[in-house]
Image 1 (tube, rainbow, N blue to C red):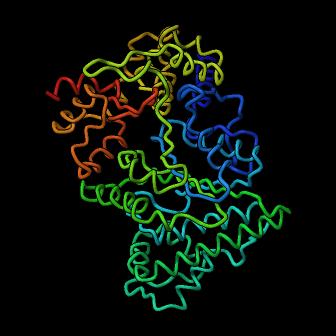
Image 2 (cartoon, rainbow, N blue to C red):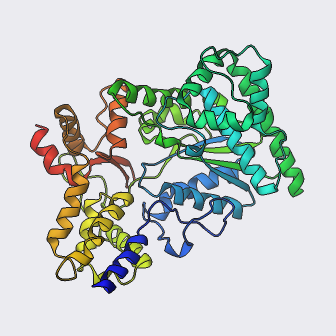
Image 3 (cartoon, rainbow, N blue to C red):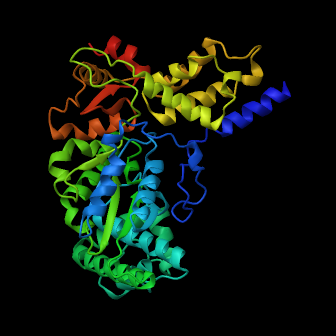
Length: 449
């Protein structure tokens, strides 16, 4: 029995989805998993690889640009961004990566001011980490702190932190200070943008000097902005979603920098604005990472999606790479069942597997009985229940048309909530389409009519 427990622990820990797969460059992301775990083309056929398409856009462009990349949490987005970094490095670019949750609280409304400060602050720190000091000395947090000290920006209800280090910490961890900062600098956004733009170009030029290449392309990959979501009541949730829309639509011009190409991850619901939004950014579109390609294609109206065996097999092959002895625990077909019922969401797939594996030492026999698989599915389903009647009606319409079913952009925040909660999953098979999470289909059809 102890041997079973030990093997189950090993299996469980091989299912750690919070660590992305790296591609041989520890400078971009420390602590990533080995590239040997990577399974290619799980999101679709190679000729529609959004990561390669984005890399080509950056490589072909003579000038720097701002690019948008999106994908629900659970699609393997960070792994694919690290792959983007590898491709760009192979193409001769100098690439930096930052997780913006290290700099901003993503459950609070965002404004262009605090985003620019955090963005350039992160870039400043990542450059300093690589070169041993900051080529843009003084660093950007110090520059902004000095700027705030010497302008008429006032903080009537809270003091300006004692120094740049304390300023960075307060911006990340103190919601009251962040709100006061947003309010205080609203009249100084253009000055802040000027400082950010000058800092970016100055730092890029010094990087080029260090590398001895005056034409070197410098790229900054900015991850986790798609996690912007409110907490609490519906008004708070709507406010945060709306702030993300405003940041990337109304302030697109302030997110571009001379000499520095930036790849921003954005919330997936902004794809509903793709026509207007994509045109404001380099590449002319939002590069979207869909859920894993487990269906043959967009179904006809009123018809269910047809499972795609090759896609399901690739999900099984991910587990085969991580724990080749998985057949000691699962029957043939059970992994495919969980893959299909995850809807191609990698995080849900790994989560259900972990829920099952932890029961290995408490069952009488292995492989697991189907009832244990059902229990894991019920647990994940339960986190999404109950579904409000109006949401169920919306989801029922999506399940028939496989379109977003947005009557107006006023519905965008509700659409965002359904995507963030994984009630709706996004797919791409020649075209973009949506479907209800497989674990919710019975509930949606029962209550959505």
